[in-house]
Image 1 (cartoon, rainbow, N blue to C red):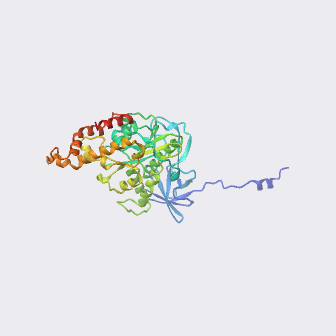
Image 2: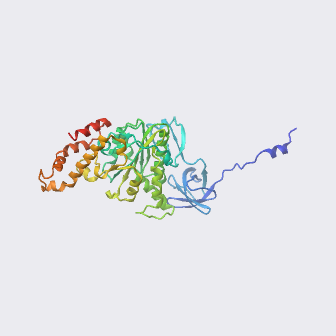
Image 3: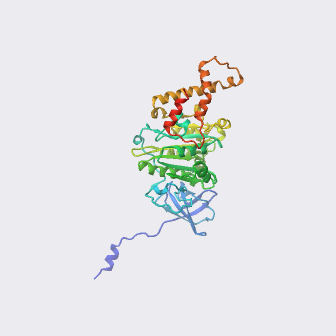
Length: 435
């Protein structure tokens, strides 16, 4: 005979109800709620009882029993007392080889017309710490981009973090497309953050020739919420880390750091942070290294990252440009005056630098780099004198030699979108400049 009382006592009682909080205040960009215990950075689901839909949000700040949520989408339709649930699994993205050739949003969901993504192997947290400093591999192997001025004068290494600095309309997207098409990376992850919606299909069609082989595009357009634009960058980095840990050399191309920073500025200011530099709150300057430092080498593979930085009014002392330069391992500066001269790509070699070049090229290559840099410097220093006729040939033999090579140097440092070269071809053409 079964003892019902002892059986009931032996059953462990559990609270099967799901705890939830409620909205108590709604502003233009944030929601304040109360009723559940959360931590900063937690992901919550906000349920609209009137319209029967839910959106995700992130806990941005906590004050006593209240907490502020920044939603991933717009907050139209929500009301006071709508429910808020804690999503315990946090924010993650599913990664795998099924992502190759696809266009996804900041949450890793497909936004192309190719249907559901299959062959996804594992989920990885979008927010994570960068690898410890002593676990990083030394950058001692060359990374070829297929772009003559970069591979010859600003040679990159596998695992390097490089900034492309330019004003609007100078040619960043064109150079990005050239690097993605011509580089030697096995996997390419392109993050388009804060771009106009029309630029996504145009970049794929014109800059990539509709070829997304071994390429993944993560897009968060300017009309999406600040949180989507922020996490689009972290999602792209998490996907790149997955392929690096599978043993691949990965190219991560992000356009642009400035719009990523502007998204965090919106979030920071809406949660009460003070503006400290041209309207940017302190969290922006803390967030940049958290993203950028995740690139690099480990024992399995590498992430070589190119981050574009939109400099306001071509001002290289813009706070985001200044902070980015201090974090990155090199910078490529595109200038408007070269664009106006029809010089493409408009890379100002004298204002650009690669901090690892001397470790990834041969001594002969590095000596040729120094020679060409000297030629460019002499031409620049004496440009006005030559133009007004104040310089006469024979006054300075070194300058005469530099001026004699000017056309050959220009031909070498320019390249059309349709041209592609491997590294050995570029080195051979580099040698011909000095013949």
